[in-house]
Image (cartoon, rainbow, N blue to C red; front, side):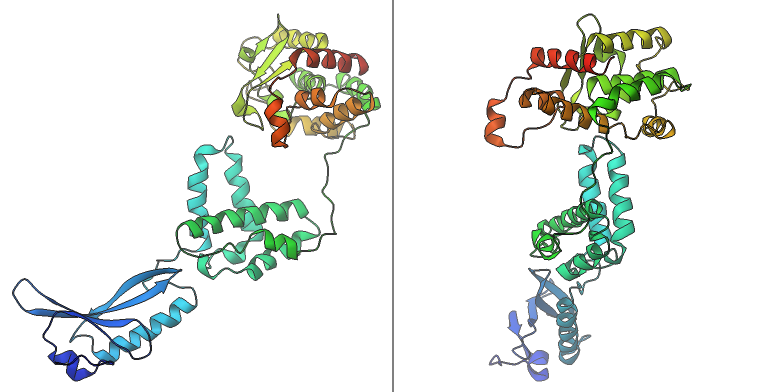
Length: 383
C-alpha cells in the first residue's frame, strides 16, 4: 500500500506493515505507530512529537481504533495550543513557581548556616511574589517580575533586590530542569527599573566621639548583667551581635587574650581570630564570675542564648541613638579618621576582600597589628 502524504481513514484501517506513518496535515507532529505484538498481530497507536518547555518529547494519544484519526488530530491541535501557553499537556509536567521554590529550598537547605534563611526566603516571596506562585515556571515573563518589583522598588529597594535574586534562583532551577530557556528575573530587569529613588539605608550608628558616653549609659542601667557585658564586649571587639550572643567559653583564651570564632558563625564562613584588649579580657572575667556554669559566655536569665532582639532593645530603651551593628561603623570611621591602616581595619571587621587580585596576596590576618589597633580603640572609648 502506498503511503499517503496525509493520512486518511482508509489507510489507517488497512495498513499492514510496521513503521511510523506521519500525518502531514497541520504540522502537529502526529504519527501512527504500527508495530507487531507478541501474538503476531499489529498494534496501532497515535503518538505526537512535540516540544514542551523547549524540550522535544513524545506524547501518546491512544490506540486505534478506539481513537480515530479525526480524534487524534483534534487532540494534537489541543496539545499544540496548550504548549503555546506554556502548559504541559501531560498534566503536572511543568511545575509552578511554588513547586520550583520548594525544590530550590530543598537544594539550599544543607548549605544554610541559619534556619532563618529559609524563613526569610518564604516570607519575602509570599509577601511580594504571591502572583507568581501558581504560574507554571515556563509562563513567567520579565513583565511579571517587573510587576512584582515595581510597587516596592522606590520604597523598599533592598527588599526588592532580594526578592529579584530569589525569583532568579527559582528561574535558574527551571532552566536547569529544561522547563524554560531563559531567566526572566535576570540583570535586564534591574536595568529596566529606575536608578533613582530610595537610597540604601545604613545601620544607625553614632559618631565615634560619643561611643564612650553610650557605654557609660548602658553600664548605668538595671539591665541583666550578661546583656550589659555582651554590649560592651560587642563595642570593644567591633564584632556582630550574633557572634557575641552565641560566644562560647571554649572559644576564649583569656590568658592569651584571643577569641577564635568558628567559621560556621561568621558571615564569611571562615574562622576569625579576635585579639582582645585588656578591657575586653576584664569583661570576660566579670562574665565568668557571674556565669561560669554553662557554655555560653553571655547567657540570658534562662540560661539560653540572648535573643537577636535583646541588644537592639537595650539600645532603643536607653535612647542610645544607634543599633548594635552600628558600632562597627563607629569603629571603622574612627579608624579612617585617625589614620589607621585600611587593611588592618578591614581585617579587624573580618571583611572579605572583593578584589580577587588583592585577596590573592592578603593571606596574613595581621593579628599583632590588630591587637595594637584594638587596644587603641579601647583606650579611645575610655573602656
